[in-house]
Amino acid sequence: MNKKVFIILIILLLILTGCNVRSTGGSFLLIKGDIDFEDNEITGKYSKFNGEKYGKYSFNEDDKLVFDITTETNKGKFAFYIVTDDHKCEIKDGVTFSVKKNTTYTFKVLGDNHSGSFSVKWKK
Image 1 (tube, rainbow, N blue to C red):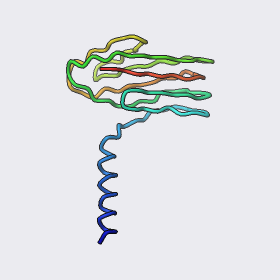
Image 2 (tube, rainbow, N blue to C red):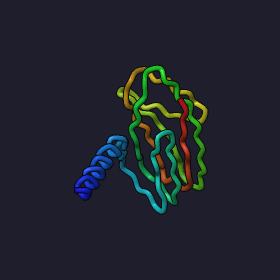
Image 3 (tube, helix red, strand yellow):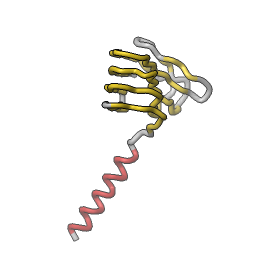
Image 4 (cartoon, helix red, strand yellow):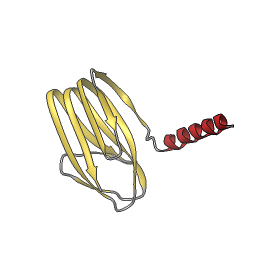
């Protein structure tokens, strides 16, 4: 009986944990490194990043997001965008973004043969 309870608890844990995973995706080439999407931060360090990778984040109306963006570039270009239903907005370090309605936004990082690292953090 204990084995069944243990298995049920593991399954419930997996289901509940899965509910908090944000969807990520994109089309990109990443060599010798990684890009991680966390609750309030996106980080990456790599030899080469070419393309785009995104994560989806939900916010409430009237939230104000203040961005702290740092990059280390050995070669190429890096950019960070917020994509809404009707437009794409490039976000620079120190920018405050006002959330207009309760919705999910796509946070997108773009690399143009970028070599180096980046950190995109935000506070409400």
